[in-house]
Amino acid sequence: MALAVSKGLTALALTDHDTLAGLHLALRSAESCTLRIIPGVEISAEYEPGMLHVLGYFPSYPQGLENALEQVQRARRERIPRIITRLNNIGMPITEAEVLQGARGAMAGRPHIARILVKKGYVKTYDEAFDGYLGTGKAAYVPKVKLTWEKTIHLIREHGGLPVLAHPYTLGLERGDLLSFTARLCAAGLAGIEVHYPEHTPDQISLYSDIASELNLVITGGSDFHGPERNSCMPGDFGIDAGLLDLFCKHLMT
Image (cartoon, rainbow, N blue to C red; front, side):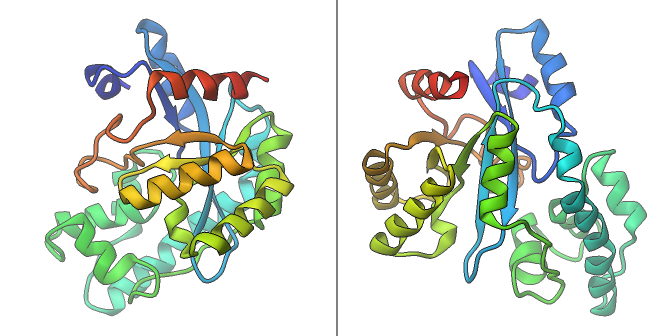
């Protein structure tokens, strides 16, 4: 939150993967400054062959959602030792205690494992850890247990939130198929699409903007900040302007 303030941001959404654990602290930390915190979450949904993440944004802390995500959180916790076992088997001995210590009480995930691999000198960079070992299909990769995308969207709606399609490029769909699939998501309750994102090309930004217009979706953007070692991207680098923020907030409050 302090970093966001130092960057001159007026609003910031915290959307951790499958957990709301950081929101209470984030909301408290913003009480002493002008930064508006938008409570959020990012949920991985079933989808083949690409990757489908759905962002949920809420007008206030969504009571009850953390309990509803318990199944996903339990699967995340069980995934960590399985990844560690695979790393140990290929000559990269690390321990679960090291990963949990690095997570400092937060929901541990692959980014925390990547940092340990860098710290112990098994890889030089965070990206190398994912590209070589932790990414989809790599030697230490373990698939996640995921909700269906219908259930994911319903869960966000059920708790008063706006479901938004995150970084659409990860779906791996061409224009026509992407429009068709996004329309199916809309029929299930999708409210927005993430247009501005570090990995999106100018052509993709144009395409996603067109889809937003055609399907009457709110436009969002974000840095997907996981720490400065990833993409050299900082909070606010790929956000939305004041006009889009006002429009987003109007949708959020209705």
